[in-house]
Length: 570
Image (tube, rainbow, N blue to C red; front, side):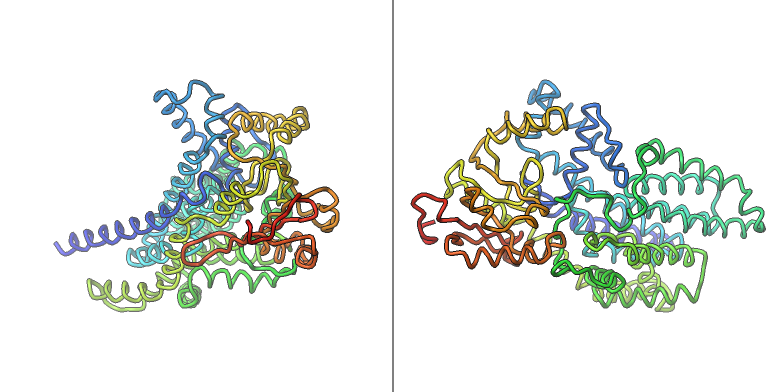
């Protein structure tokens, strides 16, 4: 009877943890819509739609896999809309997306939230298998409120899916190391391959899998010869290669550069935007210190210190699971600390490491109190709640902010009401539209047609997308001068004044701290402030209480605007 009560209590705790995890990851997923303010979200969405049109991108080999899930979900959406009579054809579906992509982004973000919650469950299972049920529950609680894990579970990006698949691979590897069978080899290989397809750094999972294989062979009484001759090993290798080849054929046909671990997979120049204010004037930090600081900011320093103590405890115990998990976390950290590109380093790279740290902390906290039963559980819960307060508070504040209107949306509405249509506007941009981190202004039909003509033979996919955009256009349009980092480095303010630019939409934080433009951006801001022909007509500052987004400044070049009025008249 006592064991049944304990089992019921465990399931209650787990249900509460998973409910909290899903709630924290789902809250705020509507942020920004119908606009997407994440630089890299659209990659997976467009790849899914591209696959639906019968095309497969073999070039983006470092990241993939997640778009297969989105492809299936968007297929269901297509069928539902067709049954409801909203659309009649694939062309209507494309126009529906271009007109308002909100439903597509909500589906993707909700999926990521569910995957992030599944990762919490898998961590519980890993902790229960490797150490104890209590350790798994505490680790799941820590991961539930972890800031980076909760934050990135809001985005349609590959980091959370890759981390979840990596946790699944580690779970089956723990089974291998502590008493599993050939079935565990196969599933560990499948999930390791899927994690690698999703994001290439997951190939580092091969190390803990080989360590688990070593302990499996040793447990069976085998030696070095059996390590290489065990059939399970070669079946796992074959499965890994086959699954990887099927899900990411471009990895073999067009392999990424060796420096992939440091360059985020060859991201577009314009997509590499300031994600956190972690670099000043383009100077890279010491990456060993930087990533430790990232872990402290995400977990909270008290919990991080406990996890470090848990690492020492694991190094002392040296169980098969300890060796396997610590090897993975240490190698993952060291690879990124030693290979990160000077301009491309982001906190999200540490998500798989956080999973291991959460488990080490949960295992230590559970082992710290002797005995068993409700008293021990109560003490452990209270201690973890106290330690997790900092990341939980940070996560709640971030979610609360996400549920409010972004400064870029506010700026877009103001510009539409106060700046005449057709005005020539300087704005951060890529080839055909503003970057997703600035105000989502709409280009003129004439410019769109010019883009279509230019890309018709060079990049037909872009041309087709722009044609749908033309068909769905509504609202204010502006003659946009799309300025990339390379163009900003090449020209000063006078160049844009001579071009006839009338207004400039600026994110000052990006111009000051971007790794791509360094001191050039600061010089450009100084020119704006010093030039008597330039007026700051409106600022849209963020507010930590109820207004997310970057600071947006709208400048006017009075010499290029007929009858320019003072700032107060706008």
